[in-house]
Length: 173
Length: 218
Image (cartoon, rainbow over all chains, first blue to last red; front, side):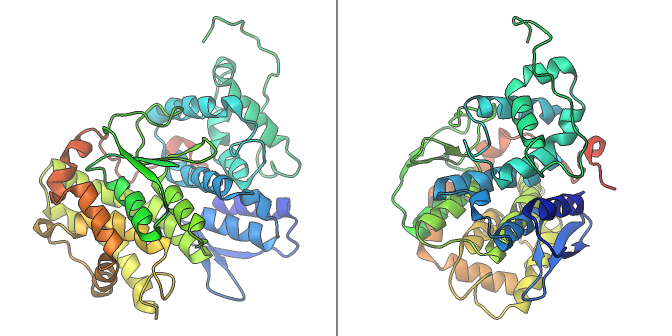
């Protein structure tokens, strides 16, 4: 999974030469084998490295504050979302829904690497949501739909159909 | 800018140590463990940093990285790698270890819970020629990992089996004045007992099982 995400990111960034990867440990942590320097380990660390390699620093945030917010959601992806239990899923979606209430993207108005990797990580949860639940988490669904239609992001993942019009009227929750 | 922290919460040690070491000006407010500071999170999450732009950071590693960046020290790839490892590997192991030590009184199991991460750290440290994890001087990676390990490694009652190179590095970071000061603020010199109140309010840590139904690993 992690290697497919990195390969999709490489394509999104337009990196011409594909990098060489291996994995380490029981958890199959991705490792980037680099020609000039030490190997780089960890999904988020490699992703940030590739963004710098492609000279797209704006994807990591354009101020110290937005860089911190981007790093926070990247960490959230690997340390929380990837290990969240079934019971946690509802809380995760509820919190994210509230967070996204007044934001287009995770770092505000700017599309960043955090959107790409939270999208990859949350895809399996959104696939499993019923229509009613998609409406319950309407801000998450809206954000998700934005990101999956963002040019060049979706790659290895199937499109999830999100209804733009509400099927159920308000009063339902 | 304002940092919210609670006494006896081991995650707060990282943020307070980063604040001391970087010398960044920031108000610190101590609140109860249960206080919901971050408006969009259902569960209490401390430490939390209110940024000048009104956004909240709720992950201690992101807070530390930010404090180092505004003090002029951007994180290198190697720093990021350690922070990611801390969040995904070390932190779950430390929480399991503290849970059995503080709440179940099974101090003997702490060594076992920490063995894997400590060996990994040992391997990396013994290959390095610098006194700190990433460089000749202390970085955000040293502060975060030291703070994560401090509650377990500083408790003499636990007698954790610490590899030699890890102990040498741990003592080197401990000698930095800001680190000790932060530890004193969070644990109040009460060691493991100082965390009891906090640990009792946390859900029991999961064993290492993952989200089976959702891991689409090929």
